Image 1: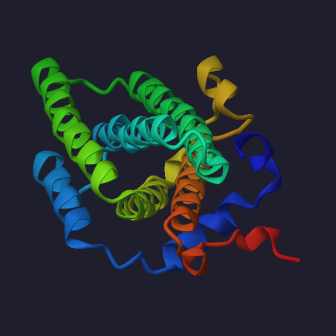
Image 2: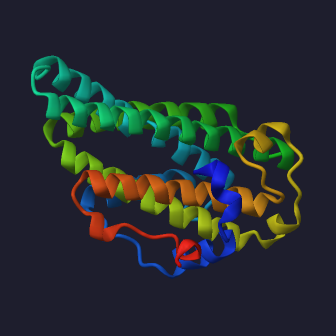
Image 3: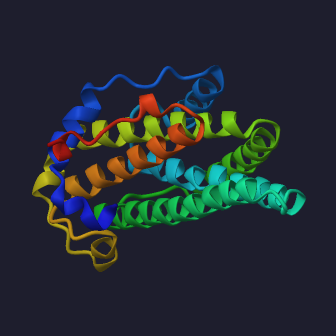
Length: 227
């Protein structure tokens, strides 16, 4: 979707996201978000969204693990195998996309000269990943539909966080993108549009997760693409 994002009114989509109520989060999701606030504070920062992106790939990896086990057990059920393969393919594409977000955020931190506490910035994400990886694998094994829903909640939270983050940093609309790594992510002129696009990627991930868990009626449309 990133390659076509220049055709979308990013500011209109940001406004739509900010006016759209968040999903009604389950207790598991609330606990996750509370933990992130406890570690990094309620205010959104580059360090905090970087942790979001480090964690974001983990559920897709858990789904892939679970789906391969399923395919090995039910290889004769072509419908089940096709469904599992669809989830794996989507998960891999989503992981690649999330990794691009991580790279972009790191480049922004370099450009802004963000100083880091090496122990804090390395140890906390490592511990968080360890716990979230275990949780995601258990959830995917026990109830894959619930795992899809949990991811939809995570991605909805991420979309809103990014759109609010851009709103708090209006100066980003005057900061031109010259970084070659970031330009590979998309041909965006300003840092404001880069982060709006990341937010829309998260919306895409939320929407796909909602479809997978059987809640297509909750999918958030693109307002600037309506006829």
